[in-house]
Length: 322
Ligand code: F6P
Image 1: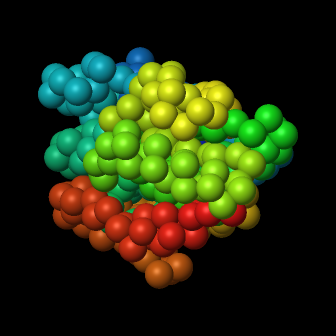
Image 2: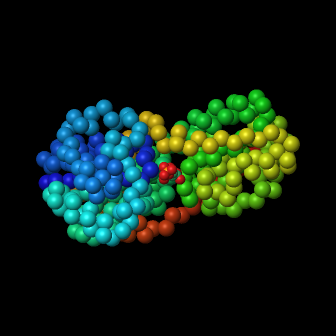
């Protein structure tokens, strides 16, 4: 294979640039031509495709976001547009594609691959919601960003003896909330995967208060069954302590990627290029027990996410009391 392309799609994630850099440089190192597609599948459909050289990906390793830009393409949900995308790649003579994105983006890649173009999926999302891989690019950075916020919020919550609810991203997945809650010492973690009623939340907050804890921190996934302001109102009434809410939103999606994300991005992109060079069929590339893995793209996307109940329970035990 001589000509390959890369695109980033869906919500951006810190480390996507590291993946672009590795794909471009590994491809060139193997004597291939590497093309960058702007704005994900939207750019593909519009033919926004340019050849990348070694220096075009210089000085991006440390930057969050994606230099190729990204988009959520509604057009690419339709078969006629997917076929159009395959036709565009064919026109440019591109023989293989690297897609960096989440579940929807990789599923789009799978549909495209049916038109005879091998697609290598690289997991890029802060949500860590792709079941076939232990980690996704951007997750580690996002968790660390949330941890920084939790530390700051803890200071002021303690001074004012308040309860603070921090709503983190993650779509329908509680991974970001559990990891940030565990490492940030949250009193309560609320995730979409586990139903908890408000009495239970109040009980835990009161339990912490009774041990002399100055603050109460609740880390809540955006997909959990609560509205932060409404929950704060209930908590104030039931615990007698002031409650505040913080929704960091897109702050979680930006920032310089951590070592873990730069490493995962660089290794998965290098593997993607190696597989395309070897004329492999479509694969999903990820990590298992710290090692880079590649599995059939269709099979990988069929794997159902398994909730890490052990980690959730541990976080709950560790967050008890003062
Ligand atoms: O998938 C990444 C993510 O940040 C989710 O956590 C969040 O629900 C969603 O994207 C937000 O999407 P948008 O950027 O379209 O608002």
